[in-house]
Length: 575
Image (tube, rainbow, N blue to C red; front, top):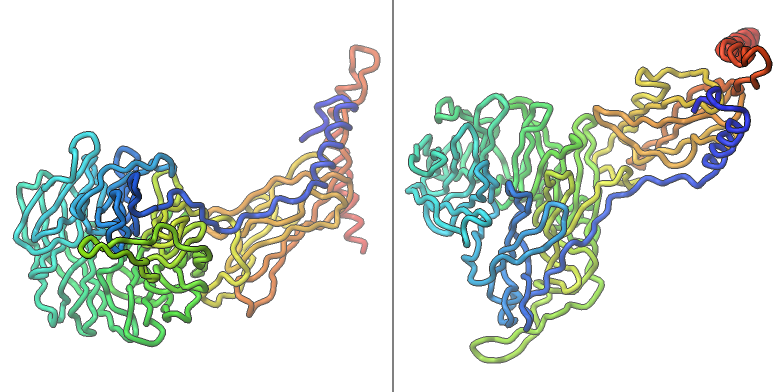
């Protein structure tokens, strides 16, 4: 703040306020965290809200997130799964307002994990029988309705693009398009048998920024473990971009919910759910150029020994530009993890490890409907309770920017949860999963990272910094009572961190930023700038001649600051 604009008494009060603020404890950056949104109870006498949610949360045009729990509805706990009735539900995209829409047979909602929210406001999903697509729109349909039945086998995924639906089907390895009204289906390509060198069993497709379709097949190819392919939207110019091998890249497995994206850097990023041994036994994260060149294994998951987890099942690029991945299993507590890949840095971070089950299971005595005999639910299905859930089957980002997911186990009853995830702005010291040396990409005044500045006490300068491969940063200064102190966020993306700081005492001060590495194999990195803080020049009291002395003070203030800066330069030059 510029004290020149105020009488001396006000200036002194403001200076005191700034000094007190500088002495306040620093606000520490937040670590990634999970907040429980909904606990699933399984069947209860008054009606259960579900159990074991294994379908994705899918946002529809109405702003609600829709999903399905595989069991646990109804009033009688009559199965090992928490009840025989499936549950169809929704929550608002702010995490509130859990609403049970239907409870009953497993057909109450599609069992597929590949729902989409389409532009017409409907949810669409592969159906339970050959060639079937079902749809639902709240307030329009009272239940999921059959929309289309084709002849291409069980449909595994639906993509809406260019005013068409694009479908993958397992029988005949068919790739086809469908008009949005469901009236015209066009076979684009039948890729062949499981031994086909160009791959077979397509199960997922996306549209690239170049207009081509990119997809995954779970078998065939020269490595026998599936392929990554591309083709024009009419099925022409089909190309195999990558042949997967179970030992070196992992299987291309249809179990993953969202296994392929094109990121903002124009590259394709994908996950393989599992492998057959070695570094990829528990799956892999990879990237590749859209022409099939520059394949890179970003990370291979071992099995239970991998603290990063294993069996990755969801991958997406969030609004912050980073790629987020959830794994179902593994990690330190064997309950799954959430990871983040920073594209600009090439850093893969372990953000969150799901908790162990520390409490007793609740509502876990079931009655066999045939014999009437009661028994305890198998511990592998409900082995206990915890605060936020365990074994995440899905992670997504709503249009509000909030992250939400579903955990199959844990929570207050042990039957699973819906949770909100906060990435935070700092990570644990050992978060890095790939060993990258920390770097201070820039630290200084203004966006040009100038290494010095001259400013009057009470006025602000803006400090910018950008880092790579760091877990967190700490600010320090030799200025007594400096506001430049405490924990600072370690940001590293196309947008850097910026903080305004006002010196509180006149003098020449050093402002330092020290950042800790994510990998224990490296040392801290630091940088500093020099701040020349001139005394605050206040407007003199107006005396005589209508306050002309005050105007003179305004004219002399900039000259005083300039004179001090010049004297400091001469003093430095003489050393």
